[in-house]
Image 1 (tube, rainbow, N blue to C red):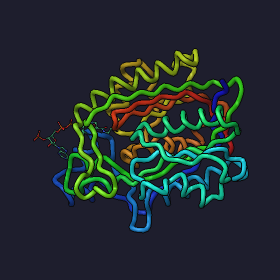
Image 2: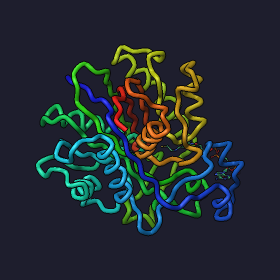
Image 3: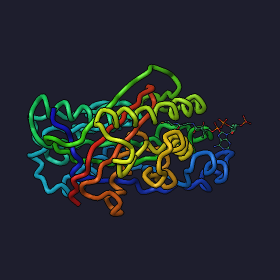
Image 4: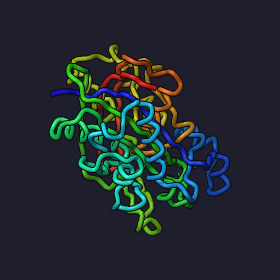
Length: 317
Ligand code: COA
């Protein structure tokens, strides 16, 4: 079966920056507690006129422009999100309309929480192989600031908003591997947008931490085995940016080179399904990810779910 390679990225961040200092005026917390426990220093939050779909459209538009492709060449559009402004139209359908993507192609949302972007890429891969077509638009977008209880210090300090988008190409003989999994659990629970006032995010932080440090190295090893590569073959590992200490555990467990593990949670917090594509876009923008490089992306989160993929960047900027 053909694999996917990453062609171009886009990103969009909302207009309001909320620092740890800002939060320490809202709840009983401190910059010191948040930084040492999570590595997070600030996060971007939606203004009144922004939501997961407006961010998704901006990120997707940028990725499409960077790819140099026409909208008519996009064979499917999949958006990963757990904070869409409406259940329907989906974010992906809103993107289809805004970008003028062809109507005779699929557009839909995937909810696998923080693993969503990997799930969405796996879905796009399957669609291109099944329905035909060469290029996929995959988006991760969230407005989690709308879904936390602003008075709950155990969650409101962790999450942020944003969107990242990727254009992927189906190609012969490219390194590509995916692993996905799920274990039904209430360890992270989020009400739908309509129920937001009564059911904001709740989480068993310690259980999720244990789950993450057990799952991430296993996912990475699985995609390495499936693509017959070793850690030394990877230029980058892009983990879900939930917590710096979780990534450090993974590095230690794998005896890996820390500089290969990209981290940006200090600026964004945990943006769930958006965290990996935001990181990819930043890496392209900052000339860290170069054409021909191989990377693994590893996600874990609510569901519980997990996912890993290995692919190359054949960049267009
Ligand atoms: N500021 C200050 N104190 C806080 C706080 C905050 N924002 N949040 C919790 N605390 C307090 C707790 O009330 C507790 O106080 P107590 O000892 O008096 O009861 C103390 O800090 C320790 O809380 P605990 O939950 O044991 O902290 P922790 O070391 O487990 O860190 C997390 C909490 C959430 C940072 C950590 O468990 C974690 O990162 N888990 C993974 C979460 C995650 O990544 N979720 C997303 C997955 S996609």
